[in-house]
Image 1 (spheres, helix red, strand yellow):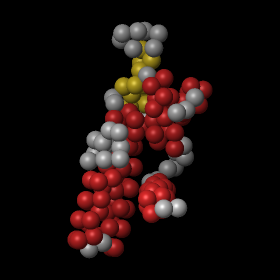
Image 2: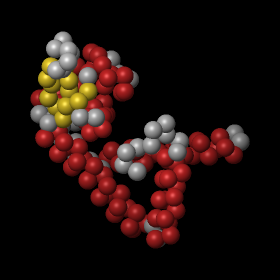
Image 3: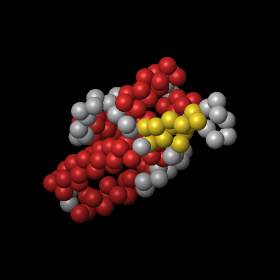
Length: 147
């Protein structure tokens, strides 16, 4: 591998490892699948989505999304209602309970991350991380809204 390939390999490994570590930091008594967590996240980005839009965004089948919806509805995290423009279609949205779950999960992960950074990073290290985030965000087609 050349140096660019090594850099890409190391970055991918780090991102995956950090993602897994963050996933471990949230309480998941409901045993939500990654797909269910991703549905909740997508609904924080856009208030209402069609099931077909979620399938496309998450690259999952309509059969599987139905199972995910069932679990999330049972937990009162999402609700479904007919589309006002086409009554044959259904719109999915977060409930207040679902919104609270997303915010609580985010808070848990971010609290863990803040604690880790405060224990391990100097102020200069944190500034390097900030600059690195800004540079890495340019790799995305659409910069995330949280930046």
